[in-house]
Amino acid sequence: MRYFLWAFLLGSSIYWIACHAITNSNPPVLEPQRYDFAGESKCDTANRRGITVAVTYFQLRDDSDGASAINATLRGLAAKSITSWLDSATIAQHPDAQTDLNKAATLLAASYDSMANDIGALGGCWELQTTGDTLHATPKILSVKVSTYAYTGGAHPNSSTSLYTFDRATGKPLALADLVTDTTALISIVEKAFRKHQELLPQYNLEERGYFLRDGKFFLPANVGVVRDGLLFYYNPYEIAAYAVGPIEVTVPYSQLQAILNDDWQAD
Image (tube, rainbow, N blue to C red):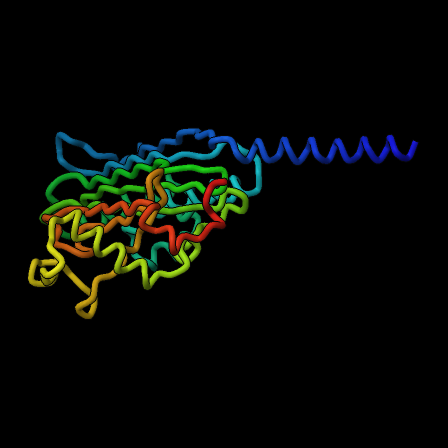
């Protein structure tokens, strides 16, 4: 009797572990989310006054702890794409705006109205559009891209893209040091790929060619993501080159990174 009970418990445990592993190995199911500002200060194209705010992102259809943590971060990033255009004092007075998109957009509208009342016409409507999407997913990680286009007056609009990679089991964001074991060696690898992408010979001085360096040295971008073929290094406008150059995306194949890749996050 004890043998059969032990066998039953062991079999049940193996079955549960197998099902759990299968669930984690499945591609994430995404639920699109969209927010459009519809307040009184919504853009009036006829009078060229008001604001337009449109935010699209996604949530994972998964009740695991890791997915819940990722969803909370993605909601926060969606709100941050709006609050980043507000001053710190306003955010401190309205902490709920950091998770509530409508609250954040309403505060942005109030900021617009205040400036319009102080200085008159602002040259048209303000516009903010944010889009979140996936870059790549494996049983272990989820890499996403959040892009924002904003016009809040001035000579030209601004655009930026941020990349994030999450541990699907814990929901925690992974830093570059989690993806590779040697960031110093990585710099020379990425510089070589960067020069090839920009058609710059090894002997060319990057600063003389108009690129921005740090203390005369090449540097890695603030945003690195995981894609199917390798690691994506994304330089936003103004980060390493003038606005007119636009963003620079450099993908380094895994074959060039084998010596420094951290095995912990890679798919089995």
